Length: 162
Image 1 (cartoon, rainbow, N blue to C red):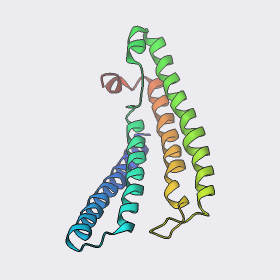
Image 2: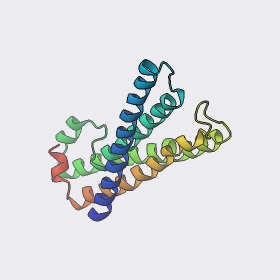
Image 3: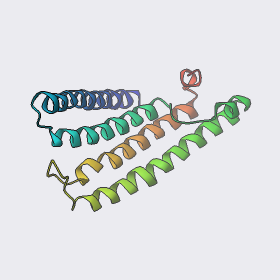
Image 4: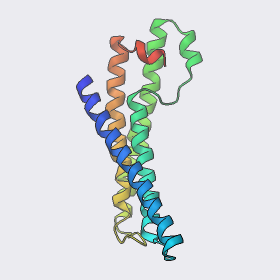
């Protein structure tokens, strides 16, 4: 389990980091073309906005892998050991349902719907950029299942301190 988590985390860090670097390079290109060449690059502006969405969603999956998503620690801290595990698992189940329904199911629906529409500057189907939604939904669900297994095994002491 730890090997799967470590591999996926490294991959997500690489993808999110690459998205960020591409965004920086494209933004510099936009500034150069707008102020030096006096001919703004519209395609790069559009691509930066899509790269930002990808970076944000991939980063959200990284947060899920670290159990850094929203919670109410005061309730968990007041509970005993058994109640703590129950509340932590409940929080993970809620995150799982969100990832299943909104990101995965909804993401597939919106990506399929948007495949018929083309981006204005890039000329590619918009649905390609929405593929990140179900991708991150599936990654989140995998991380959440790993999180629940760690909680049930009692191997989450380092996560509780965070």
